[in-house]
Amino acid sequence: MARGGSTLCVINQGIGGNRLLSDGIGTAALARFDRDILATPGLGHVVIAVGNDLVFSFAPRTGEAAGFLDMFPGAPVTVDDVIAAHLQLASRARAHGAKVHAATIAPYGGSEMYSPQGDKAREQVNAWIRTSGAFDGLLDFDAVWRDPADRARIRDGLHMGDHLHGSDAGYAALAEAVDLSLFD
Image (cartoon, rainbow, N blue to C red):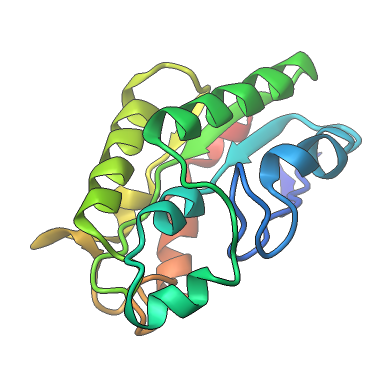
C-alpha cells in the first residue's frame, strides 16, 4: 500500500482460534512470535490482537461448548497470565526496534463460549490495555463492536450470527476504526 511517497506492507500472521499461551488451532502466539513476527524483514510495528485464551479458559464446560473445548487442551489462564504475555511480546518486539500496538478483546456475549467470569476477565484485560501505557498505540476493537445496550455483546450486524466472530461488516468496521497515523 502506498502512502505519502512510501510503501507500507501489512503482514497478518493471525490464526483463527489461536491463543497467546496454549496451542490450539496452530502454535501459541508466544511460541511462534520470533519465527512469524520478529523474523519479518523491515519490521516496524506489531499489533497484538489475541484474546482467545480467556474465552477458552472461562467457557462453560457443558453443552456444545464442552465438546468444542475438548479439541483445545491447555491449562486455564488468568488475567495476570494474559497481561504477562502481552508484556513479553511487547518487550520482544521493542528489542527488535518495533513499535507495539495492542487491540482490546471484543465482546462475545450470546455465544456458546460466553460466561460472566470470562467477560469480567476480558473487561479487566481491556482496562489494562487501555490504561497501562505499555503500548505505543491502541486499537479499541471492543469499543467498535460492543452493543451500547449490552457491553458483553457484539452489535447486531457486526457478527456472523454466532455472537463470537465478525461479519464482513464487522471486520470492515474494525478496519475503518484503525488510526493509520499510528503506523507513520
